[in-house]
Image 1 (cartoon, one colour):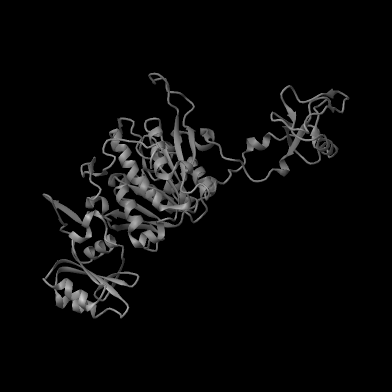
Image 2: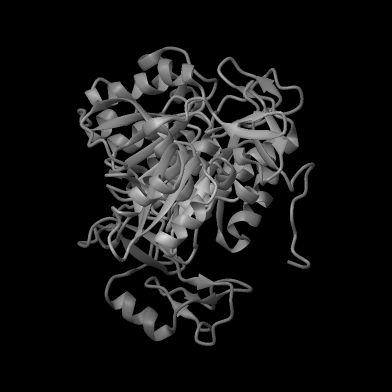
Length: 527
């Protein structure tokens, strides 16, 4: 759009994919590695599961591939596309440091490209009343804000939350101790988003007192003057002691009329000070306070936890882990503000599994994605297994009386359906039998549903996959199983001359595709 502000970086027009060696590479957007929908393969489960997309999901693999599968595989897209209520992610901060369990030193443009690809998919997965919370520090926060403006729209920006993660500045800091992080918050549609109030705190209630033994109970005083001009707010008042006050003070006005002030005073709702000679104040009674408190954009560690709390919670369960796992109380606040029990919470940089653990304890459905198989094995799964088994005594467990239950599926992002041989793209060696059937169904958006010669369905169109060469005899046999109002898409690794025309003659509207060529034609998934 002309005149629109946009963030620019090297290779922005290209896509970014893992290079297989722990890094990333820039490739053209019509490359099959960008358009491919990989399979999510079940590798295990814990607790009570149904074996369907309705379960909680712990996915090991690259977050782009996992999000792509959730968004475009029909079985998962029905459950997740446009249905996720909350996304909280704590991606690599790109601080230029190297940590034991992950690389946090991506080149700047690579970091931006990596984030953009994932945020675009997150946008598709979010419900219209959903929100995404991106946890960062100063290294990339400002750039990510502009990037998210582009993806979600500036009008859907909610806030930059500041989390003061420590109260003890680091004396080792060269110039200034960085003691806070940011959480960028965007809505899918701000007009649909509901942010719930937080529970009142004991400190808030202690601010209400009753020095005059008012029968209505504790109260706190509120000023009845205002800075803005009010035509009925210019009058003198006489205090109970007889003192005459010409007005609030220079440049201010009473915020209520004299008639309203007299009415409130007669009802005992005006406080004039211990001696009856102060400015009038309106009493706000604790018994009349409704709901909770409006969330603030500044979060203090005394309320949501210190950075050390997150470390301690994980260490007690699975041993030493990442440098900065987040405290459960902080994730609890985010989930509490944005979701209801049963809503879907997603974290595609799962790490030690804090988001999933808190969501599970709070009765939300969750999806966690973690790239490193070692992290999943040693930390993420181990922690979540203890949550399910009721053997996690830390975090918010005691506060909400969590005692275990539920379960989750463990999935792995499958290998690519394609391999490169020089400048050619060929099918991978594993593309055989049922695995090949499922992969083809995923690429073409068919629900995998084996029945007779068919392996998938999409409306009135059936999918048949031939693990070899299709000819006139093969397609005639396939067509014979169709109902009168159905058509078929046949995918084969090769086809004898005349087969495509024979299929069209037998079933008008049916089509023959060759794998892999027609699955990745022009870099777009055939729909």
